[in-house]
Length: 368
Image (tube, rainbow, N blue to C red; front, side, top):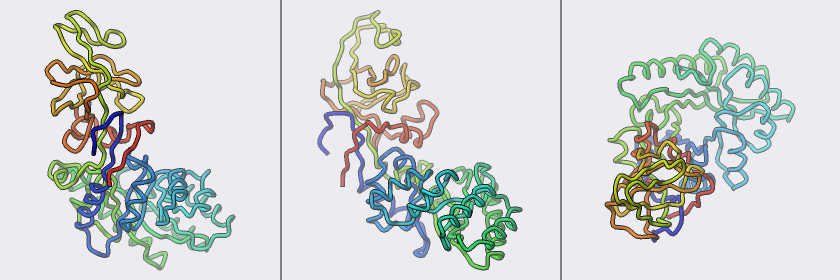
C-alpha cells in the first residue's frame, strides 16, 4: 500500500483469508467453523470483516452482545449468529433479528422461554453453555435435569448447540486442567443429550484449543484471535499473519537543548541535545498513558523510537535523535513485523488488549 498520510488502521483481507484457511486446515472437513467477531472484530473493524468471512463461507458468527448482532444483520450478514452474553432485557430484539442466544443460567433460560412464547416462536435455536472450570458463565453439571425439564416443557425453543469454554488452552503446563475440562464437558453434554432425546452440535475449542486439543474439536470450533493473526505461541504466530497495521506520520520535528522538557507536566527532560517527533495519535486513539516515559515505542524507517514524556489525548512525542527521518515520514505503531503483541509486552499486556483499544475514530483502510 502507498505510504500513509494520516493515522490509519490498515486491514489486510488477504491475511484474514490466509489465517482462516490455515486454522481450517487443522479441522476435519465436517467440523463447522465459528468466527468470533465481537468487539469490532477484535478492534479491527465491525462490518467488512464479517462480510468477507461470509464470502469465504464461514459457518457461524459469534458476538458478545445483542447490539453487535443487530449491526451485522443490518449490514447483510445472513449466517447464524450466536450471542455469547445476551441480557434478558434484549431478548425480544434478539428474536426479532434472528440472533441465537447463549443461555447460561436458570434466569436466562426461564426468561428466554417466556420471551419466545410471547413472540409465538417454535423451536427457536438456543445454545446451552456449561461452566467446566473457567467460572465465568455457564450451568453446572448438576443443572442438567433442570435444563432438560424446562426445555421439554416448551415447544418455543430447541437446543442448537451445547458448549463450554477452555480456561488455559494456550498453556501446555495446564494440560491436566484442560483435559479435566474436556471430560467434564463430555459428561454434562452426554447427560443433556440423553434427556433431550436429540443431539445438538457440541463446541468447546477457542483458537489455542483448535491448535493444542484436536480431540476436543467436536462438531464446531470457535476462532477469534487466530483469525486476526495471533496464535498465543511463538510457533503458531509464525503460521499466522496479523491483519491490522496501525500507522501514522511525523507531524513535526523539534530540536531541543539540554535541560528542555517535552509534553504535559514536563514529563520528559532532555539530558543532551536531542531530536523529537510529534505524531498524531494519543490515548483517545488507543495508545494508553502507560506507554509513555520510554516504555512503549513506535518504528520509523525500521528503527525503534521510544515514546517520551506523557502520552497526550491526540498526540505522542518520540525520540528520533538517532533516526534519519523527516516530517511526513510514515510511523508504524504495530504491523506484521512490529506486532501488537510486541508492543503489548512493554506494558505486560496482550495482543487482545492492544488491538481492541484502537479507537473508532482511527480511519480504517482495507487492502484486498
